[in-house]
Amino acid sequence: MLHLAVVGKDVSQSDSPSMHTFILQKLGAKCSYERVSVPPAQFMERAEELFSRFDAFNVTIPFKGEIIRFLKKTEGDARVFGAVNTVVSATRTGYNTDGEGFALMLRNAGVEVAGRTALVLGAGGAGRSCCKKLADGGAVVSVYERDEERLQEVYREIGGFSPLTEVPFAPYDIVVNCTGIGMHDTVGKTPVVAFEGGASEPIGEQLLSLCETAVDLIYVPAQSEFLRIAASLNKRTVNGAAMLFYQAYYADCIYLRRGTDAAEAKTLWDEYRGGKV
Image (cartoon, rainbow, N blue to C red; front, side):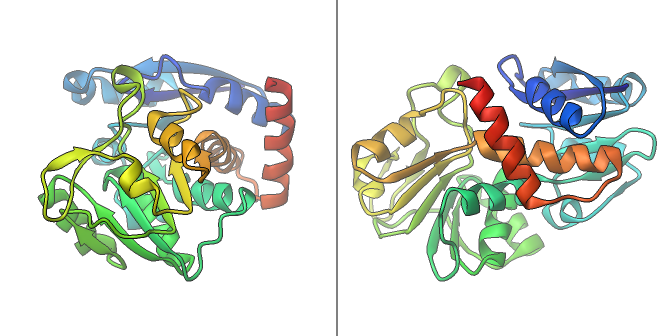
């Protein structure tokens, strides 16, 4: 029996417990899985207890960077992204499965990446993962971030994109919201960005009308305001539910020390989603 948890600022609505329980059961393992919401001001004092309470745990907004100082090492994408979403307590090792989950979500949603232009909104932990995987997939990537210091830090760490402190009204094939704006206490809102030559304003029809695909990592609500606007313009929309499932699958394979298989992950997602309808 694996004792697991998801840790974040507010994970009260997280689907992680049901997803991980489903995946692990299908892979022949049992688990208990808790939601642990931690106010940001308390994270530093409460982080240490996670390693004794849980065999492993998943980390989400806004602690993907903060958890690293409590680890002995990071592996794979976590080293590149400077962000961790998966922790094995016994070895205090951090991993990041967000990028693989994001890439598989786009692939299975029929979103072509190679040779396309992409605008990523937000350069936090999730934004870094998405930016890197889009660039690795052959996209021409631009990243908008209000915090210029963070933007430049990410650019120095991973590069491969155009850093933006203002967004031009230009056609992007893919626009990805990695800010978290549109869930919890910001439901009904879209990210506010600084547009080139004008004042800051919420993302709306003017920019989304120029894209082909709008992707929002938010999955609760299933249709954020960002995606609602895009859908009203007959754009292809993708929410983050499949990414959450796929990154959970890759994390669970780490917990079980087994290999991964993209076809297996898709089969499990289709079965899980079918059972949720």
